[in-house]
Length: 206
Length: 224
Image (cartoon, rainbow over all chains, first blue to last red; front, side, top):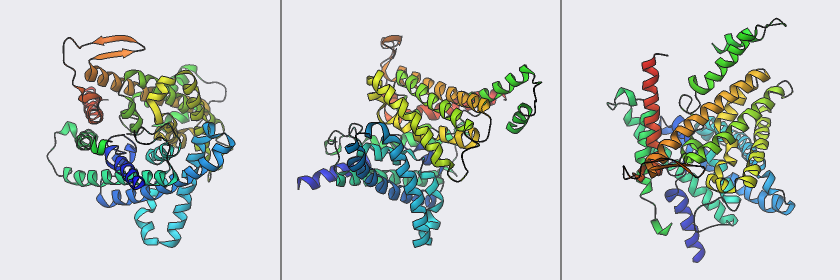
């Protein structure tokens, strides 16, 4: 019971209270770059969720069973985690292409972009290496907790992406002052959405 | 335009006019710092810019750290560009960048622990900063060592000044004070009641949105 509650708190905390994009500013490049259309942002979000969960699980195992026993985690965690992500992205591209061409057509073009999506590396580092996570309920994640954390955080990314693209589709036809057209308005919209997400602060004492 | 500049530099067998070379390098530097500013024009590397600009002091460290990685990896990648085969170039770039980030990570942890704790995960995340991989892919892997290094310095300066400006605006408005290295440079607390909104998360988006709108306006007025 205690455990389930903890997992639920981690999930909600990662998804809403500490939303990856709107509260913590991760992955803004893709947030601004690929959110023009609803379909593309759904595709991107699915790809990110897929890669993030896998990358965090693999990084956790790597950290626990290879880097920590050898005592080289402090020096090599950055290159090893980023290589895990890069290899995983490559592998998943091949896998999806072979097994599900339909899903590949929807998601495939976003896969190469994910290697440099900072949300993936951020979630992997925070979920695996102790000392980075600022959520006050956890310091050291177990395997299940790290995976739940990764799933919640990447779902939060997807939520923000989908909501934002819905707003952006409407904004295209709205009357806007010429000065604010384009990028300035994107950030002002993001600011208002972020204001909404700040409201989740304090939820369940997180 | 960029290609023309490059062509002028390359076919000079010995009799290079020094002023023209310097002018070209200056053009590359200005391109990174102003014309194609990574944050204001290319919209890359935004994540770290918005997150660390909560305090002006943070932005100085972050700017220097990211610029160091950018310049060092651009230098190394452009000097190794003939050895790196095309198919595996991205993993090689990432490993090179990650090594320099590790250097910065450990150095900051050793000498500036309080700043390191405040910046948190953003220091290791320099490795996925789009500016660095973007410059490596688009510039350093194709051009000469000197030009690439100057281009990287320009980009680094461009990144740092926008970051610093954001930090100064947000800290001054949000807390009423601007404190850099324990020195109070600006103190407005007696004049205004500081709106804390500016150092919150939505404040960062808003300040950046209006900043790019304002600088765009200035840009258009100048007509260049």
